[in-house]
Image (tube, rainbow, N blue to C red; front, side, top):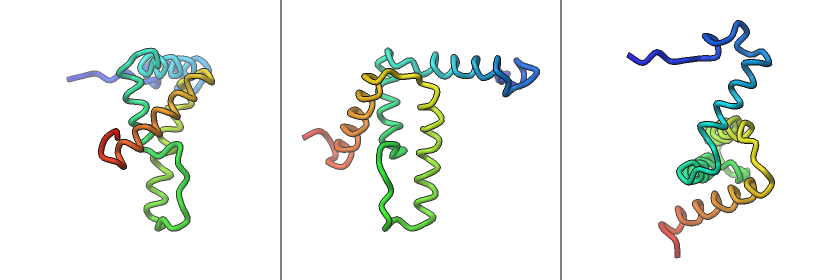
Length: 108
């Protein structure tokens, strides 16, 4: 059985400054944008969650809530990435390319 490590087990105050720093470093280590696999996964997640898209008004409320939730979850991850402006722009382009490829069922 895997014994999951949590901030609550590591720190007396799981949301204190030391824990926040540990959490930010953990996210950065797991999602290091220099890693090719990480780039692919982040572009896919940004596309899947619609992070760079705006919901249209024609979306039913229950679908809008789910879509907003997906974007919020990616937003939490994005907050910890600490990307440069160049890396952010690259992620936007990659997510858009994924979205276009999905819509067209492949690159044209």
